[in-house]
Length: 451
Image (tube, rainbow, N blue to C red; front, side):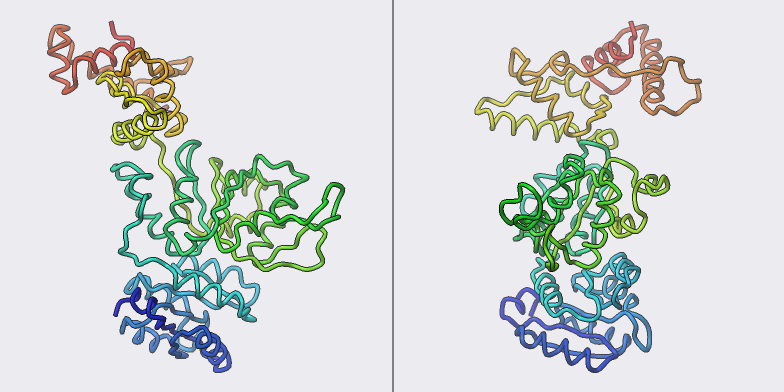
């Protein structure tokens, strides 16, 4: 019987690994009351033998065991039984152990003394994970591209969706960081709960605490009723902190405590509320460099950047430009209720050599503008209104390899001039020699100033 079949038949089974008999008994009783099957052991070696049977849907393991530690078991399960979620039980306040477990591939962690409420939430989340081989509806259509960088990102998203580890998404503006965060959420155990995106740079500093944690009626002037914060709104789901580098240091301290304790206190409240939130953050800035400059807390950085996902720039995926452009044009046409435009060969060639400093977001803006400006259904290079390449005031030396675009332009110019020289400036013959169309060659000559 597959794991999915056992879950649907309410016969999910949990393996508990802990050398303390009273902890094993507490966990076993709690899980049995949840209608789950339970097997227990106090040793790593026996746990590995039991896991090999393939009859478990979740493993709960302590960190310290007589014949090894929980991290060994986490790594073993990830290597030989990757579709089995494993969660670790850590000592209270041991942030280092929790982070190490998540980096090793643990689904999540729970701290001692055990909170049975947090334990039940963790178990329910782990058992609601989709089968690893199940298709991810919509993912293929929304994360387009077949270039190696994009394929790597899709593989990482698939892996990260099966964990509760905090994810730090890096990449240039417009490279799709929020889309990646949404796909991680939609393909994971929290997919039926809220995804709450927050732009940290758009919140006034004096309102941050009340926006993140909520407030009680009368907490301050204007607080006429209770209000939930971002953490409460995202309970059970995912909180996406975009441009997290913009958080002021005072707020960073409060955010760190909320993440570590999994509890928040509303402004004006006397007690804390438990929250179950997965944190995914993103920024186009270099957080590690900001830590060195003491503009970002190191302890918060290590809590947020457990696993890093780098989004490639569009310049790194030029072969995907035709596919992306076609999808964007089709969507814009459908939204406007008009016949779909099409790119001329020269316009497509122009896009494939353009730098896209604004990445996919800029590509969308360029195409939307081009469709509006084009007098016909065919988009010409002039309709794109691409910005000309920028050159440094002093030309770089002949062997300089950066700025990269200048270096590539010099190579392209030399190849075109050599082809033109060999064909005695017959552009049709030169284009054939270079393996490109005549229109593409004409555009490249105009762009590079070759007359």
